[in-house]
Amino acid sequence: MHSYQLAISNIAEARTVSQCILLNADYSFMNVVHWKRALRLVVKKKVVVLSYSERQILGSEGFAMRIPAIMKLIKFIRSVYRSRVPFSRRNVLIRDGFTCVYCGAREGKMTIDHIIPISKGGNSTFENCVACCRSCNAVKGNRTPSQANIYMSQRPYQPTISEFLQLRLKRLGIKNFWHHIEFY
Ligand SMILES: [Zn+2]
Image 1: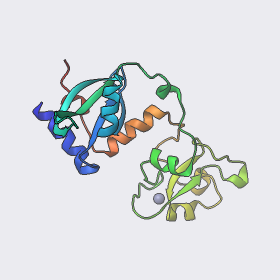
Image 2: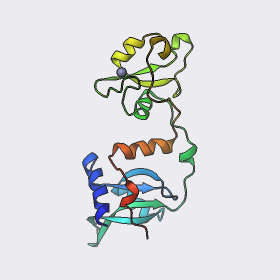
Image 3: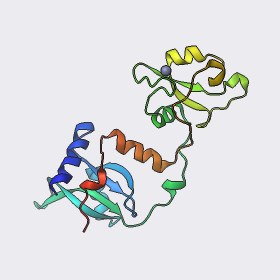
């Protein structure tokens, strides 16, 4: 239980102290939810609590209740593995970690680059759009990457909801997540 506290303090640093990890029924990461939502899921018997945080809330009748730290859904939600994240500029930036795919820059305002420019028949899709810093976008201009002699560090893809949730876990700074869970 001790190492588990470490995982929570990572979340605390990244977000607030009042969030709980929600896992799918197969123990894959689903989301980070506010403790109020966590308690609602417990009351509705939608989840099994795998471990509790040290924090408590006081119920109206005066009894103390510990806030869940990690919960698992009882019913498996399959759709997260199939459902596609809707295309938007912001979702392209999230997928690419707000990092320019051409030069790796993370600073400054990120733009969206159409790999095949719209003027050359390129579409606004996850497969044709990447995060791009302003200077790379200016260099590339109205050309394809090979015409501009610049290269992408990763191949753009259509993300699923599940992949986005994994990215969120990463952004929250939770690494080696499985080491922190005690199964019982
Ligand atoms: Zn760049």
